[in-house]
Amino acid sequence: MDGILLLDKPLGLSSNKALQAARSIFKANKAGHTGSLDPLASGLLPVCFGEATKFSGFLLESSKTYRARCQLGQTSTTGDAEGELSVPVEVNIDRATLARVVGDFTGRIRQVPPMHSAVKHEGQRLYSLARQGVEVERASREVEIYRLDVLGLNGSQLELDLCCSKGTYVRTLVEDIGAALGCGAYLCGLERTGVDPFWSGRRYTLDELRAINDDPQQVLDASLLPIDAALTEWPLLELDADLTFYLKQGQPVQVPRAPVRGYVRLVDVDHGFIGAGYILSDGRVAPKRMLKTV
View (tube, helix red, strand yellow):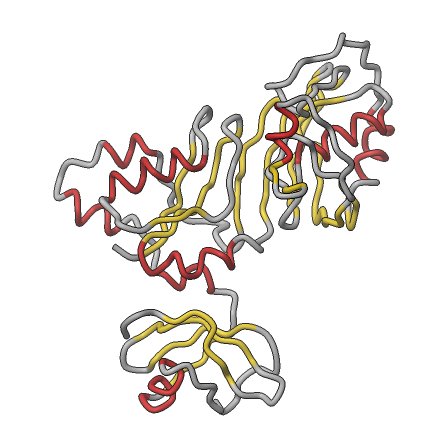
């Protein structure tokens, strides 16, 4: 059972519980997801099975797209609907002001990770400290907002569509926009709509997977993307049997017309995808993550 499932995670379920549910449906021995979604968030959660788990770490670095619903005029102790809400204030914001403020958050920005997050402080998760009523100083981090569009403003409800780099906290972004608008804001709904490179492709809900009756194993297998679907944007290097042999032994090799830097997708001309490699300073290709068998 090797491949990648584009799972449409439902509201109210943690990423780990969604992963375990998918793992049970597929009867997979080994599985991992590629970046968690909070229980109050829904949307795309790529799940890797079997040998594909070797490449899940690369997807953690991917940019992502979201659709966010924001409540203006109130703040939350957690930045989202789970926290204690402040007394609401009147929201009176014109479109020009909104466009200007939102535009200020496009590009490279700095964020302070929220206390209710998985970031570690002296060995403890911040959310664990927050549950104890402890707040600690956190260093800001640079993230990048590639695109940030206003989809609508209905009274005090704001809807945003964004594309951002790894490590971006959407609720922190919403809080910072609310502060810049002078009325406060919190995240009241979030859907992850895309993960690079999975901008398209069929997504499956847990209910859809559970409902498969006719020849279930064949249908389940057909719902998986190939392992190298996670690496489709990397340059592809085709290798003969000799080069494949040495790479599988952990030895760097010289490959004609290889890129001068970065990661590469390694394909044996006779057996297909065999793993991921990277370019050394002397131009040779070294193995990074290799499949067990060709």
